[in-house]
Image 1 (cartoon, one colour):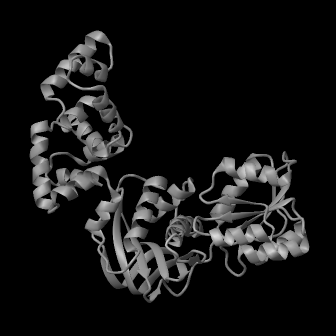
Image 2 (image 1 turned 90 degrees about the vertical axis):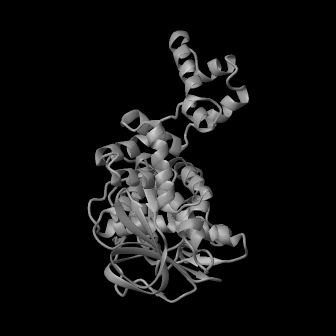
Length: 435
């Protein structure tokens, strides 16, 4: 986040141009910081000493650290510590900035001091920014008297980094009673606490699509069913991680299926955390133990006919039925299973459809998502086992659904697969079930 905020500051100062900024952010994600840069930043070496080692490197073809130790400038332990910091995003950005632009190190120090003064950050907050320490940053940007707001926001930001992009920063959270949006996907967690988590976009800026494409690992070009479905599954992963973390504090919440809403107004009592994702604006909305209405008319996602689906002509493998309310999840499972030589002979978007499809198709195995509308995976499992006590059922589960997962295994499920999907895990579990 520091790189984005400081980069924007340099843009405003006209110290760099837009091309410089975009190049710096892109390159910063992969560059390795030179040990000399880190050694100077940590006060272990002077610029002159670094230059001396660099000159020796040119003639000796040896590593910087080895020469610095031999010259008595660093210890082996210090070299190890410097190596561990080569992925530091702040140092990556600073190194590229001085390498790729006309900004000298002396001028950079002046800009940093000015940025510090204008931003109003304390010295500790500046260090937290440089470290990209999400927990410390949330204490700066997200203040709430309600519990869990910061916890959920932290999980969400880590998943943005994991699945979508490292190029983002957040702005100060605000409390709201009404929010008009272009696109919104949300999920409710109910039980010992009543929580709504939503991702929304006020205008068609492309951030909603970026989350959808990043999480699904496929290019989604417009905000229709697939985009709402994918963003809903992204929220589902965050919700599952949160549900698991609070279960350790003896707080139980159950996850309802995600929903999507186009062109409506959210109402109630909730917090909005703005996120600038690669220059596109996105809002994270969280409501805890308060009234909240995401909208009146949810969009229908994941629609499928459960009738027989013709297998690929070159596939002679076992016949598998996939039941999940997420069309994106079904597509991913289908691609993985068919790629491994299995036949996906049918799909269902809820437990009720899954039971009917099983009765009609009698597959060799069935995958059942736990969280589905109309009839969830547990209920569908019970009905399928009535039809076929030897059914090979594999449960699809998000983090935070341990209680339901244990019930499913006790009921008769053979295995389980975790979201987000891991191809090796899926193939291994299906193979073992079909033995």
